Image (cartoon, rainbow, N blue to C red):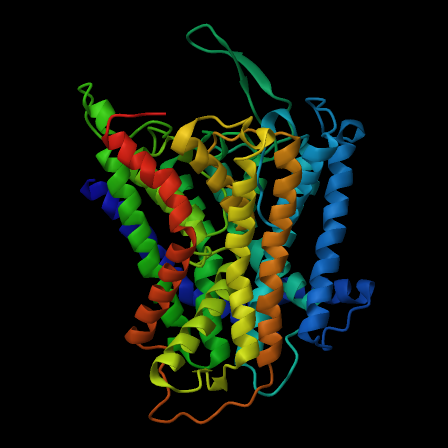
Length: 566
């Protein structure tokens, strides 16, 4: 570890903190229907869309109807992308003449991008035509991110409202999230990335001869426009196989910083938006601080482990940290920071290969996901995931003092606690059971890149990532029919079976009267509450996943100290 590495992390987080208030305030105005500086540009487009689609923007939905609209929109998008991928061979903008995807691969990709996961068992530069990249993958990056933001806003309304038992209009929220939030930031971000040398064209790939005399193929295509929304929408799917470790996808230190800021921006901003809706900004800052402390802890461990390196390598006389699988342009510090940022959120982008991290360094991204990716989290999903933990925390606090739990003055009753518990059970159920099955069947171990504890970590990481809709991988797990089908099912369950209890929780709280505050009311913006919330998050994650982690990264670390490698 060195001063430069720490200052990179501090500088990054200071910028995140500075943009949280203005972006959160802007999103509050957007979703409350207020006037913003972009209203003159997008309001006519928004009204035209409502007229064409016969949507009444003033008509709000119950939580059940909002959920139905979410599911219908998502599954139609799934069918659209599946058909596009199965027919890309005959479609335009395919200068490399790539073939259609197989049925199982198209299923996996379509589910992956519909659920905001962007898990990839394929190399983008050798599989996807430009039309598939733009009209299929990049389009889903926008709308899946917009759906996540819409659900977060609906949950916020349900938790904070006392005058209505509705949670908003899904079509209005998705439209506004796309037009006023995702699109303008993406346009500016795309231009900034192009200024750093990132390709944005329709050229066929270029074959050149390097100075060493070797033939090399240089990828091109509409890369910058997809890169910006993959980060901003916390999607993560790479235009090329190496993702943000590739020079074309992440050419400079500035582009690396910008991509990380895009990943955190909306998740952090929504905490301020939440405070505005709650009419108590301290509630939003309490969630922000809890997330910040978990982020700092994760980065510190990852940076320390990667800086310490592998003692087996040190024994050969090689000093320094673990540079295997890392871009020398970024080094250990920026790689550990990027890995922490992308797994704190549901963004599967990588600027280094997690498979090459030290056991404890690789454990941090894994634990980030196992905690529920609530550290700013995916666009929207992090906030409503955190609210589920808040409900569990006030319930536990109520048990400790013998008082009916309350949150924002609303009584938390059995129904709300049951929904929060259901949401918390989705991740362990769909992450651990498929791992247990996979280690017992030949198809589940046939494509592992390593044996022993590291191979188990690849499986555990893969199913944790797909259940949490992250999409990053240990990079040692190969695809086959078994994984394409099973992980597609896991991604869908991880997205919707987590979303459903969160939205129903909001519906059960919407319109509830607010009880007057008394001297016995538990302050949910106090340092004590923040500490208790972090404790609940860590304990739930540790109790659930520690046995599995002990079989993977932890035992691998002990074996590394004993001189064994994989």
